[in-house]
Length: 457
Image (tube, rainbow, N blue to C red; front, side, top):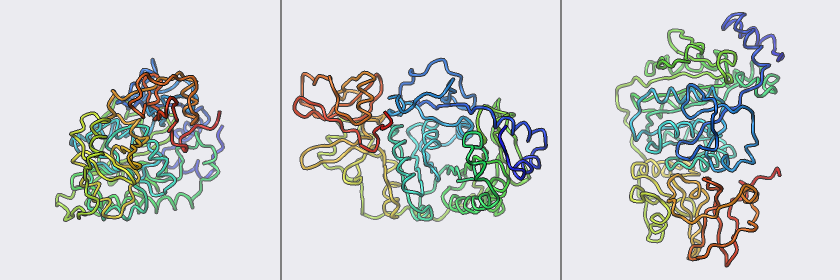
């Protein structure tokens, strides 16, 4: 039996009664289920005959945990390992009927589970801006979105207080807020010892501040989807109370799903909160709320525009776009770090507005690569992009060779191609693209970024 503090046990009993609290405590001693979410734009035959997660069309339970580190499909972004309860956001987002070219903001995005879920739910036409305050976590986020391979991500880092300066208003702002982690007690037992009133209160004030920023970023008629992996009312109902008391936002009921009766729904007349409990559904603890901006007046905001960082197309970069990307006419080229990226026309203005507002972007659209002198060096993200032209040359490897590639070793026993007019080849395993090889003479050189290599074996 998991050892809970008397204070936490008393809180749960006050919320739902003794029987519910006892059932929850018993469930916390059970083994956590393992679940994944498949990438709709990458082949998924790697997994077959799995039990589906009922509330997410792309979600599945695994019979047991596998070594994801040694699975090329994991590194190629064909699936994401995600806790099943958090996949409820798929059902909520699908129910909103958002326009095809919506702008979405994931405000606390690392490590990328919610961002990739949004992409899998809404497709590649929407623009998804994923922001993470802490730079180290933002880098993990960027790497996971590169694996996922969609062309519609902007990733930024730094203080969230800078975001309203861009002038962008979003159709949906997702706030998966930092929290005390009560819902993860089974998965992370150390969280039990760390739980106390001080931590709950600290998270509560942080959540209120984040939500206040979120209200400035959602358009009239748009939505805020708020979630935590915690149970208490301080970090759910009370964190929402400030923005709901102003009258511009209203809390909404989530449309029916056959499994929604398994959740605990609380409605105090102001906020509506849905809670997933591990003894009621096959997943960890998770809470979520849907809010709508009921203000009908258009806010007087303008995107930050000037002539700096304008999306331009140099002849050499245009040839790269035409060579590597499917449907290149749908994209414009913009400068990105020391190279170039490809952006849909409808995303260019938002991209420029972020840059002009001095928001630090660390990923944009499809990073193409850069020129070093006259030599072209493709970006690693291009190899994993769902928009990559499938006619690019590939080097097929078996599993052992693929794991060597992922260890950043140069390949062994892979013969060079008969024709060598191309310098760059995709390193592939079955249907998975893993990165780039460069052909130097008659030998391949591994160009997997060193910070992505596997080191355990």
